[in-house]
Image 1 (spheres, rainbow, N blue to C red):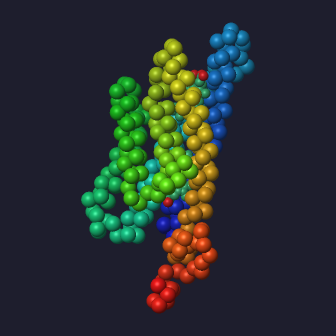
Image 2 (image 1 turned 120 degrees about the vertical axis):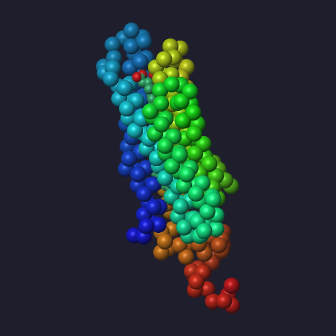
Image 3 (image 1 turned 60 degrees about the vertical axis):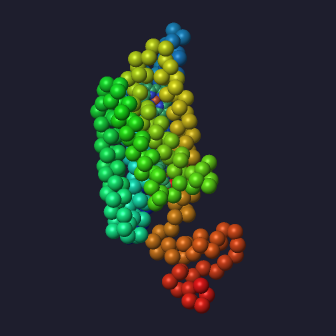
Length: 246
Ligand code: HEM
Ligand code: HEM
């Protein structure tokens, strides 16, 4: 397998092997955390152990790190791959350096978000991490499917990553807030995140079927160039099309 193909498969592999199992565990523990809280608040005895909340938190921290990581990889891999193929490092060295810097700064902001305790630092590093992902996602190499945004792997993925960043940033507020507004907001927003994750499974699998491996690329590019999804056509790789047929 070529390095380019490996970089294409690395992101879905990490999502399937690492992130999706964590989504299942975090969601199951979230449900139990809520059930236990409601039972205890109604003065009944709960069979769910008190430790379930902190277990949800520790799995949640791994989950958020996984989602931020795969989203960063998801945008960085195609940018770097396409920059190498298109010779962008020579043509636009400034932008290439900027992208490299953004990848490092985004990862560093995420690490700092995990270390920060005061509210203003949590806010600052959460904003920087989210901005880093969005700025990288705005690069022309990233396929955003803007014409069909409602089935876009990019938009769903970025929103899911932003929700995970927010979850990490507000942990102390969830515990501090006696009126449970943060707790309720967290549960409601992450119910949406679970739906987005299901969407990511669907749109990601579709994208894997659409993006060719490198040996298939010359044929598949022609399929798109000739719009074979809407009309019958015969496909030859661009390099084998006779001059007179062009
Ligand atoms: C699949 C993603 C997630 C879902 C569906 C989810 C949902 C929930 C729910 C339903 C609760 C209980 C709310 C209640 O008591 O009514 C909860 C509690 C909590 N969640 Fe999450 N959450 C997710 C991810 C995360 C992440 C990524 C973090 C932070 C890293 C996090 C931190 C917390 C904390 C600190 C609590 C309070 C736990 C306690 O009471 O000890 N959650 N979450
Ligand atoms: C937590 C789940 C996931 C998140 C947050 C996520 C996020 C992203 C983001 C932000 C991108 C860059 C935009 C784009 O090219 O569409 C991307 C790319 C991609 N994703 Fe995901 N994704 C997730 C799960 C998956 C899954 C389960 C699959 C497939 C089974 C998948 C397959 C892909 C593919 C094929 C690409 C293009 C990568 C490339 O060109 O190198 N993703 N993902």
